[in-house]
Length: 173
Image (tube, rainbow, N blue to C red):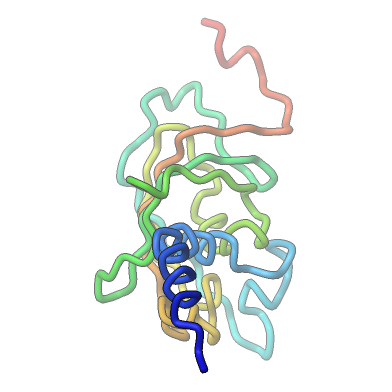
């Protein structure tokens, strides 16, 4: 005999968490360590990795004082991720809230997002077209992202924390 009340409790508890879990899968689903890992960059089995297509949507407000994002920096972003048919599968606006992650760490975010964000300045927005080998490859994300799917991510850089030395002369006039 099945325990229907327990099933209802689990459903009731899990349903509000679905958007958050989807975002975690998108931003944190990778299992490799970094950009140079051939399994994440599409270099295995002779497959040539295609580049991430980057379109700047909004230029930084103060480009002369920009400190561009690099691998190893912690970034805070708003983003919307879509499939080719326009289906949104991750969105940090609204109840999901902004997301922070370490750029270039494939444990934090798919490598195509890191690649497409390199060089971004705070306040800048970009549209990224990420090939499957730099997103979820032949595996996909069951129920969300089909195998071998391109993903389309609009991303806005809100904050940047860097371990690099910031040149204080950038702020002097």
